[in-house]
Structures are given as structure tokens and as C-alpha cells.
Image 1 (cartoon, rainbow, N blue to C red):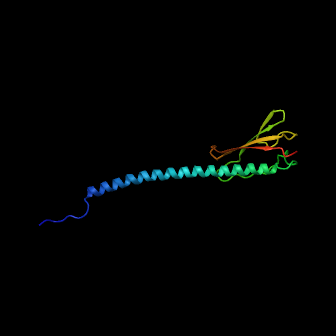
Image 2: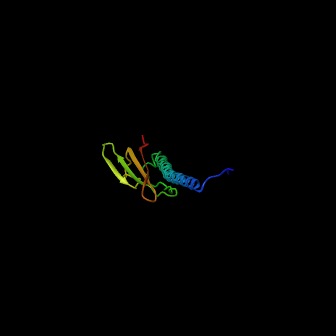
Image 3: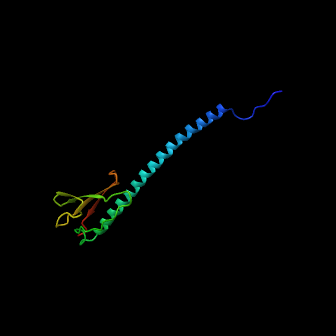
Length: 141
């Protein structure tokens, strides 16, 4: 009489476990990389929103003529993982001359007709996460 064999041999099980392990190892690498990209994108989105909000706050401050030359704008605290932004402002005069200042929001005693303001937002590791530029005209007639 013949005996029927049901089930898998030890070699077949070992091969199946090895193939499963390799597939899971590859999948874990893909998942880890995806989480790293997600974290990086999260920093960039938060930095863009923060920079945009900060620039809008400055523009709103300078909308009326009396505040256009005032540089005392309240500092917005940066979100977690980001540091206080750096500013570069270029003041353009009617004669075409320009004055560039860094991390100061006033040009001179006389307000210029145009200000070009750029903001750079870095993370705590020093990587640039956002760079925005806007121009703000003098509201006086």
C-alpha cells in the first residue's frame, strides 16, 4: 500500500520563509524612505506657511503711510523644528539707487517708494526650507 504525503517538506518551508523575509526587508526600506520624505515635506510646508504669514504680517503693517517707515514689527515665533528667519530688504529710491539691509526692517529716515523683502526660513539643522520674496510700495500718494 502507498502512503499519501500531505503538507510541505522542511526545505520547502525554509525557502518560503527566506523569500518572505527578503520581500519584507525590501518593503521596510520603502516604508522608512517614505516616512523620511514625509517628514522633510512637512518641514517645507510649515516653513512656507510660516514665511508667507510673516510676509503678510509685514505687508499689513506697512499698508498705512504712518507705519511704512516704522520697523517695530512683532516677531512671530517659528514653529517647532524651525529657527527665527533671516530677512534681506532692498530699498529702491526714485533715482534708481538701492540700499540692501539684512535682518533690519527699516531703510533710512526717509521711506523709499519701494521695498523688496526676502525671507529665508531654516530648520534647526541649518537647511533652507523656504525662501519667499515680495515687493511693498510706499502707500503715500
